[in-house]
Amino acid sequence: MTPQTDPQALAAEAAASLTERFGVGSIDLALVLGSGWSGAAAGLGEPIGECLLEELPGFAKPVVAGHGGALKLVRTSAGKVAALFTGRTHYYEGRGVAAVVHGVRTAAAAGARTIVLTNGCGGLHLEWAPGTPVLIRDHINLTGATPLVGATFIDLTEAYSQRLRALAHEVDPTLAEGVYVQFSGPQYETPAEVRMAGILGGDLVGMSTTLETIAAREAGLEVLGISLVTNPGAGISPTPLHHAEVIAAGQAAEPRLRELLAGLLDRL
Picture 1 (spheres, rainbow, N blue to C red):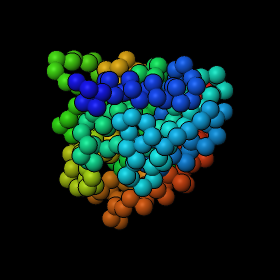
Picture 2: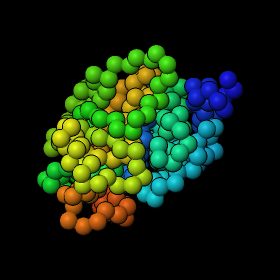
Picture 3: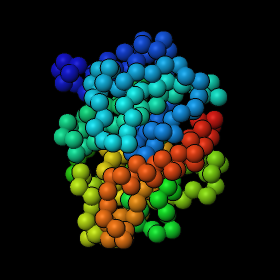
C-alpha cells in the first residue's frame, strides 16, 4: 500500500509533518474539539504554533458549522505539548471510516498517549439543560462501522478511562456521566430512535466519537470523552431540532468549557 491507501502510513506521514512543522520531537496529548467546543480552545496554554488542518497529509477542511478548522499546538502549565484539533471528519460525510479516525491515529503516531474527545449532542434527561457537559462513561455504536480491519480484537471494557474521569471530577465535581449513542446521521434522530437509545441504556445521542474511541484504544491511547448537551433529543425537545441550537449552546457554555479543559490540561 502507498501512504495514500494505508491509513497507518498516512497517519505516520501526517505526524512527521506535524512535528517537523512545529519543531517538536513529539506531542504528549491531543484534544478533538467537536461541535460547540472550538471556542473553548482559546488560552489553553502557551502557543507553539498552528496551521489549517487541510495543510497536513490526509486531513480535509471541516464541513460542519460550529467546528474550527485548525490544528493548534500549545504547551500546558504542566509542561506537556498538547495538540488541539478544532474540527473533525464525520462518518456521514462519506469519506470512509479511515478519514474519520485519521486525527486520532495521527496524534498517536506523533507520540500522544492521552486523548480527549468532545462533541455536541442531544440529551435524554431534562435535568441536563443545554450547555451541560457530561462525561462519557461508555458508548453504543449504532453506525454499523468500525475502524478495525481483520481479526483485530480490541477490549473495550474500559473504553473511557476511569482514571481520567476521576481527574475531570477533581476539576468539576458536579459533572454527570452517561452512555453516548452514536447514530450515522446526518439527519437528527427520530423520537422513536431516541426512545430506543434510552431503552438500550443511552443517555446522550450524537453523530461522532465512538469510531474515534475505538481507533484510540487500538492505538493504546487513554481516552476521556466529554459531551456538551446542546439540546434535548427529538421527542423530548418541545421544538424542532436545528444545528443553530448546537452553535448557540456552545457559545453560551464557552467559559465553563474553557475552565473544564484548562483544569484538565493542568492535570494531564
